[in-house]
Amino acid sequence: MKVGHPPPKPLMVFDGDCGFCRKWIGRWRHLTGGHVDYEPYQKVSADYPEIPLGDFKKAVQLILPDGRVFQGAQAVFEGMTPVGALKWLAWVYGHVPGFARVSEWAYAFVASHRQFFSSADSCGFSAADEKPQYFFSRWLFLKILALAYLSAFGSLWPQVDGLIGKRGILPAASFLGAAREQLGPAAFWAFPSLCWVDAGKGFLHFLCAGGVALSLLLFFGLVPALCLALLWVFYLSLVSVGGDFLSFQWDNLLLEAGLLAVFAVPPRWRLQRKDSQPIPGLILFLLQWLLFRLMFSSGVCKLASGDPAWRGLTALEYHYETQPLPTTLAWFMSQLPAWFQKLSCLYMFGVELIVPFLIFGPRRLRPAAFLAFVSLQILILLTGNYCFFNLLTLGLCLFALEDAAWPGWFKNWWEGKSTRAHGKAPVGRWPSWVTGSFAALAIYMTVFQMTYTVGFRAPWPSWMAGIYQALDPLRSFNSYGLFAVMTTTRPEITVEGSDDGVQWKAYGFKWKPGDLKRAPGYVAPYQPRLDWQMWFAALGSLQQNPWFGNFMVRLLQGSPDVLGLLGYNPFPQAPPRFIRAEVYDYSFTTFDEKAKTGDWWKAEYRGPYTRPFSLQQLGLKK
Image 1 (cartoon, rainbow, N blue to C red):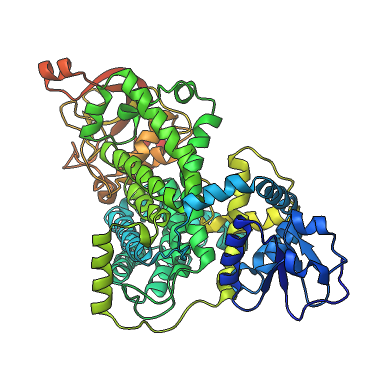
Image 2 (image 1 turned 180 degrees about the horizontal axis):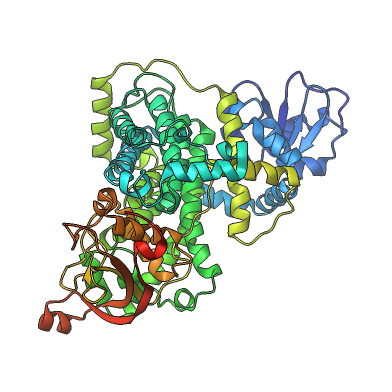
């Protein structure tokens, strides 16, 4: 449709009798500045007789200077194009399959229930309707992100030789060599890493040490954008060659959050406590969207798996003792009655499946989402050793809480410190085309992921699926969901060596269960990656965990780097001639059993994991 006498600049026409409409027009007017005019149809409808009066009453109308007319959701998206960071909305409306239909349906639904949404809107926004600010959330998030990176690099540094060094379990140099032989030049993109330059011990240590140094610079707010970019490159370089030992969900989460953080800070030498440049709107949305996906996907995957333990709310009756590295508190939590475990499971589902929607809901309800997320993460942190995962998730939770929601005394302290410490911050920010382009790509990639997480198979064009596959090696646009199927037993592998094949001595691990009298300990945010992988190996077979065979060979060879990953070496003088692995079923003792024996664990022999073998039988040398 076109009008005969268009306005000199874009004109948004709305229902002036609708309070809900007036409130949102006020927000749009604030966003678009003077680039778009806004008038009620009661005042201007006579000027545009080409548009039926019923259309004015049904939906907003956007009239452009060239005479074109848009209505409904399309009018809203086209009207936001003067806002550089929101130009992508109109493009997505016109190019992404299904988006136009869904957005118009949503617009029509809200328009036909204005009274309800007006009431909900009034609950969610302050009277002044001020724009939410996240200066403190960004400042604290960067501190937490720096600590997460520090933990990741710092804990990997003393382990890197034993895990992926030349004499380690999965040597990075050998891995890259095999990848290049099989994939040719495509290997460089399939496994993006600075280790293609050098995968030796010195360079691996350089990456870890560099990560530690950059984390400290980031913590103190020095060249944050550059530090964040380099931290992402360094960590991706290690994850790409780390194989099973750096394939955890929190490794990917750190990469995704770290990449988003690059664009959340202005590119300057120092980020002041209260910087004049807010987080770009699209980047803020992506950080909140990441928190939503992380929490919601965790709940969806549990139900989608069909696991009876989750659907019957009995999963927590097993979780505390069967999780990879439980804590002392986990032992006590496992003793609680079944009704408490079911209530806890129900609470967890509420936090993971319902509360995430409050992130994008009314402003006055978002603090409740923040508190729910934080309470769940603290409970997980106290009962399980999940390295920096809970710390990083707590950092992301900050974006569910705007600055105005913090207590008055805290805001006074924050404002006072900011004013005394710094003057006006220098101007400088990412160009809108940079953040807009990155955000459009990130939204596409993560929406693609979420459609599969929730079981919706959208008819994505082949070229869009190709983009997803091409960017997947960056590990920065991920799907999430832990413990989709609850393990109800706890198999543990014991590794034993022998000089004669008769007398066997067990190797000791630093943190995984072994000695029945050793209490489950606290090690997070440090991650003993070998101990973690031993949990996964026990759930499968030797054929499913080829790294485990390499591990046993290194023990027979007496590799000091691999032995350094262990807590106890029963063969300090020379490595054994034979080695084997046995499987036991471990479970927590009860209060009565612990009082009688002093044991935290009880174990029952299940059978062999590997047959005894020697280097000679494998045709290898020490």
